[in-house]
Figure 1 (cartoon, rainbow, N blue to C red):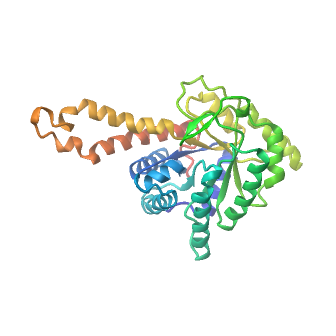
Figure 2 (figure 1 turned 60 degrees about the vertical axis):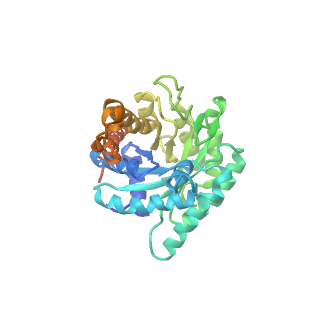
Length: 342
């Protein structure tokens, strides 16, 4: 199927919310990892989200070029073509963009999508993330208002972050302290600043102990009940029933989370969960296995010529893609999106 149109993406998000499931949002940084993610979603019978970070976009443009916009547009153009061959809907997203990179990443990409939409096409990306977790909440939401207006004009969904995710991603590090937990007051401030969809659709990453990076299960102290408290505070502010779920929530920093924590987060309104560390590991671990077990073929040991079938990048790349695709299926199963493709 083609990359999701804005209408298809809206339907994807609505179905997830109504059906109490979430889509894995898989970070990729190459054609190989993109293809692996596509295969994983197809194998799971799940629609999904594939995303690129600032560092991934840099890498996609060429490690010596490091241009986030050209890397993102190259990724999107490739994805728009190859996704046609898979029987599921895929949305494209750009991940964490801090304030100092807005002018070199999100704003020009929104402008490119606006130009495409005005010419009768669809946006390059279906959603973009503004990561204001490192600035005061007032400034965070002020910038979000400006970006939401631009996103609405481009028929694109905006993702914001209210709170701080600990750990490190793409050189941005968050402290592990009480700021990891969003408050009901944060939720109310967000609703007051951005509305409840009338000013443009947005996804909200509220933090409930999330930490980027590699952690064993049980080491990350998540409190999914914070998400419910935020939903209830927003519902009260909007005059909705106590069981309403006004926010479309996003779960960041999920590595090491327990299955019951993931399930509780989805119950409380999470419809998108970022997955990066675990799929990176699955991809690279299979390459390591390949190289170690077949080193005599990969290397020209003792003056021999090696085995081209062993060191051909397509050979080990295919194995790595298969392993990553399996991990994507696992994510779809944990988030209950497996088998939900309409």
